[in-house]
Length: 296
Image 1 (cartoon, rainbow, N blue to C red):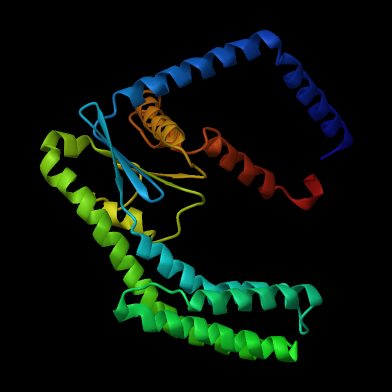
Image 2: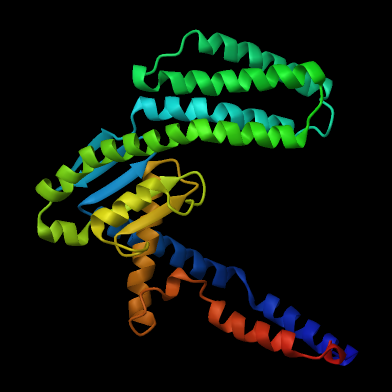
């Protein structure tokens, strides 16, 4: 790009920026305000609705709100035990070959906590031994590295593999516990309380602190229950959401954008779920990177 072209481009950008004035900003503020009102209007008419938020599920049905706990305590207890080897692994990533004094002291304290917790474990008899074995493996490994103050990466890998062989039993049981309780609470609503019209228009919002991992248990359950293969029609995942109201707002935005997309983009209800500038941007990016080095 020549110096003259760069100069003209700078003038163009300056003119574009100068057009943005307070009056136009006010128009956009009115748009945002009206958008939020329209979103809230859609939300107010959602029924039935299921909101999955952590250990609980909220069901909105015929104007009434019901809340159910769907995650058993044992699920969390199994997770806590299974995280013990993972905690040790993560701590050792903070050091290199030799344990620092800080990490050594941290692991010494953790070892004391493991000894204490081992004495007070309360699990069903048929799975108690597995929990002891996970803790004992972790205690043995901690004693070893605290004595040598060395981190052998091969030895650490062996420890991780041994731990996996043990906590894989917990993983299987935790999945069964969570799914059985979720199904016990949800399926009667879906099959008995909802009529066919309500089942057809049911919306499910699943919240989480991060993007749902592939195969996320709650999403997979509702995919199977509602015979869905992807998000968007009946099921929405809302990440970084920790309140019921925020989850409703995410759902409202999704539904409003789908409705507006159908009206503005020839029936394409998915169009506004992508960045509005994406199609034009992709064409321009191809143009930008198709230029030769001499043109830059």
